[in-house]
Length: 223
Image 1: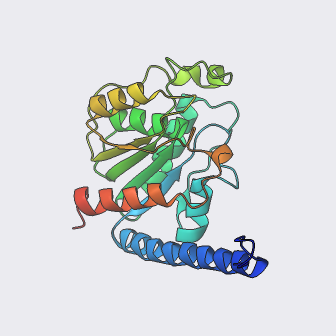
Image 2: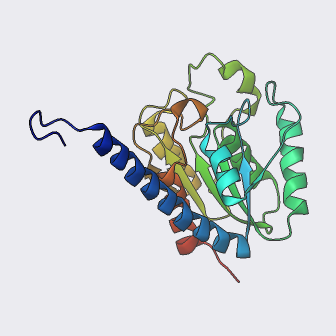
C-alpha cells in the first residue's frame, strides 16, 4: 500500500492475486477429494444439454478437475428425444456402479423424463441444474427442444436435487420451485447466475459442487 496515496501498489495486487489463486487451488483440492469419495461408491455421469457444454461450462471444469464421465450425444444441435434417451440408457447400462446423474438444462429435462420411463434400480440419484422450461420459455432456441415437452410432473423415483438461478431466461424462479415440488426434489437457489451455463463464466462453480457433495452425503445410500 502506498502510504501517501492510500492506493494499492503493484506488489499488493500481485500478493492479492496469489492469495486468491491459492484459495481457489485449496478449494479445488478439497472438492476433488470429496468427488473421489463419491466415485468410490457411484458413477457420476455428466448429462449436458443443447449444444453440449462448452470449455467455460462448469460441467467441463468438473469433468477435468474431478475426473468425471460425460455423456456424448450424436447430434447436439438438433436433439431427438428417442435418440438422446437411448444414448443415456446405454451409458447407464454400461456403468459399473450405481449412477449419479449430474444434468444441466435439456440434459436435466432428459433425465427427468428418463426416470419416469425406465426401471431405476441402477440410479443412485439425480442432481439437476437449470432444467429448460420448454412449455414457458420464450428463448429464441426453444423450438429446437420443443419435442421434449411436456415436462413430467410425477415425483422422482430416486433422490433428486434441483438448483436454479433467479435470472435464468430458460426457467423462472417460481417455475423452478414448482418443478422441484412436483419431482419431490431438494431445491437450492443458485443466485443470479443466468442459465448456469457456458456463457455465465462460473469457473469451477464451487457452490454447485458443494451442494452436490452435501446432497450425496445426506441422501444417497453407499452400501
